[in-house]
Image (cartoon, rainbow, N blue to C red; front, side, top):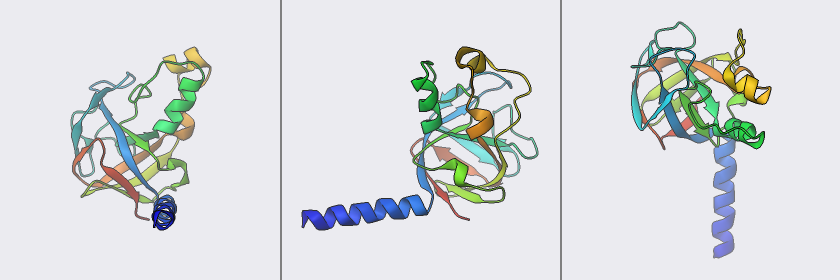
Length: 164
């Protein structure tokens, strides 16, 4: 009986990986661009706008930014004391490989929010404080950006699922 449960759990884990399933580890906002963001428990996303109250909302293609906690952990391994929001990302994910997404792919967060991936990585015009501390920064290489196709409320712990 225990063996069957392990097999079922492993099968579910594999299905989750194949279906791009993860969860929100943190949500972060700031009223100014170029600064570390403040972590929030929940936020509201507005269609074709972004996160209400965030400085990056309203931009055409980069309404919401996402970065995996696994990327942040890489920077911690280099000796940096960083946390979710320190790379100016809005949504920190866990358990979903963001770099497998392509421009135009869609993700569903929680029960109703739908994002469309609009950009992979970004050009770093000026070196941020993180770059000078570590000699590297993950957001330009491992961060992704999205437009809000369908708004609604999201909160830490919500699922994030690739839907095509």
